[in-house]
Amino acid sequence: MQKERRTQSMSEHYENSGVDRLYSAVWGENIHYGVYETGEETIEEATWAAKRLMAEAARLRAGERVLEVACGYGATARYLAEEYGVTVVASNISETQLARCREMAESRALEGRVSFEYADYHELPFADESFDVWWCQESMVHSPDKERVLREAYRVLKPGGRAVISDHIFWHERLTREERAAVEARYGMTNLSSPADYERHIEASGLRLVEHRDWQRHAAHHRAKVLARLEQHMDEFAREMDRETLANNHRSWAHWADLAAEGKLSLDFYLAEKPAD
Image (cartoon, rainbow, N blue to C red; front, top):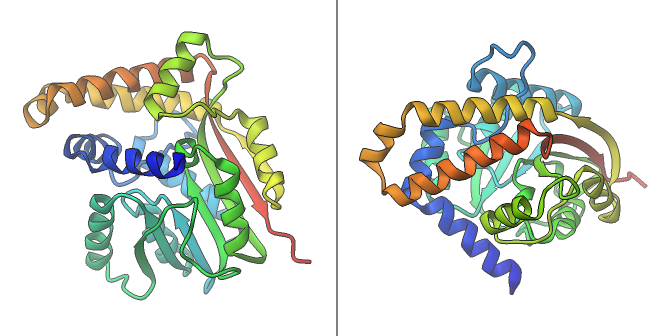
C-alpha cells in the first residue's frame, strides 16, 4: 500500500503541467545530472558526458536488449539506441512524459529500436531473464523500497547481465534534523540511503557490485548550474505557471544546491552484475 501511494504521488508530481514545464525548460531533454571535465561545459554537454561514461562502463554491445526504468523524457533510451545499437524498452509512471518520449522517438525514426511503456520499477511487467542491461538514472531516490527495485532488476536480467545505476544521494549521516525533515517532506519518505547503504542494497538483491564512482563534485557543480538557469528565467516562468509551484520548486532546488555544495547531497554511479552461475 505504501508503494502504491508513493507511485501515485510521484506520478501526480510529474504530471503537473508547471513541473513538466520547469524540468523541460531548465534541465532540457535530460532530467539527469552531468559530469564536468573542465567545469565550463553546459548542462547539456555534461549530461551527455555522464551517459557516455555510464554506457562505456557497462560495456554495451550492439544487439543487446536494455530496460531503462524511470526514463524521464526518453533521452537516454534514444541515445543508447543510436550510439550503441542496442534495443531499448524504456518505462515510466508519468503518462505525460511517456507521450513526449514517443513523439520524440518517432521524429528520430527509432521505431523498432526504442519502445516506451508504463511500468513501476517496484513491480515490472516483464519476463524473468529477458534483458541484458537494466538502467536506472537518478530515480531510485524516489523509491521507498530500494531493495525491492533492485530485486526486480535481478529478476529481469539474464545471467551475466548488468545493472547500471546513478543516483543523487542524500547523506543522512551528515544532514541536520531540519535538513532531513525537508528532504523527507519533498520525497514523501523516510528511507534516505547514503552511498554505503546503496552498496548494501545492491548486494542484498543478489547482484554483485562491480564498480562504484563518487561523483559528488559533479553533483555540486550541476546543482549550481541548474539553479542559476532557473533563476535566470524566473520572470518568464511566473507568467506561465502558478506561483506556488514555481516557488516550491525554486526553494527545493536552492536547498539541494546548498546541500550539494556542503557535501550532503552526492551523485554516485554503480555498476553491478547478475552472477552467471
